[in-house]
Length: 289
Image (cartoon, rainbow, N blue to C red; front, side):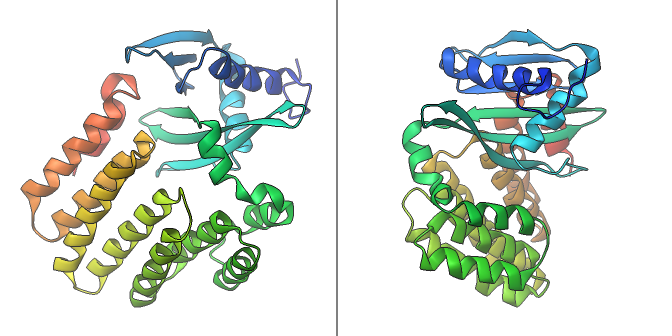
């Protein structure tokens, strides 16, 4: 059987079926592991239910298909996250957040269905398809000049989320810590002007905290790390992202010598992730200093 990326291929139909089942049964969270080979959905009582068994010979291909749908590179150590869109016909779409993390000898992928209201606010680039293609070209490139050009075009067109995406990529790509601090401050200010852009504000605060540690401003870094955690809790982020912010804060506090305080944040992050992956794999990785 040829499992390729053609729109009518068995692999594409299988990936789409997983997403359509989430919509059909109002499932907010679905998870999948190559090693376990079972797609599981989380029920309203918080328990997990086996939804679909995946044949051995397509387990890896299905994971790769989901990553391509989210325009993600395969993670080599750090987790990756993105957003994917499923066309439903008659001009309708459904949107999902995706988070992939390698753990020990396996991978875990968590997919979160975004409500229509959030999708309407967050998918502003849909009106400018050329900006989407430019995003795909620049993602992870470190091309600061290209990202700045995209940011300016998006700002001129009133596409706040593409502008913030460009800011986020630039902040991560800057090598100079002082420049990164300034860029993160500008990114947070830009996020304040875009409704529903709380995640970008948290991202900016966390990046500024990390950069502050690089220039010896530990006290300010600790304050910013705690502000990032507080903001993430306030806006109820997608669970894996909230956990990552807790982990960033833990590392910053540990660098400042506040090991007990840092451990508290590690334990909070582990508690958030423990429910998303069985066998405690993510939690164990987070708790390891």
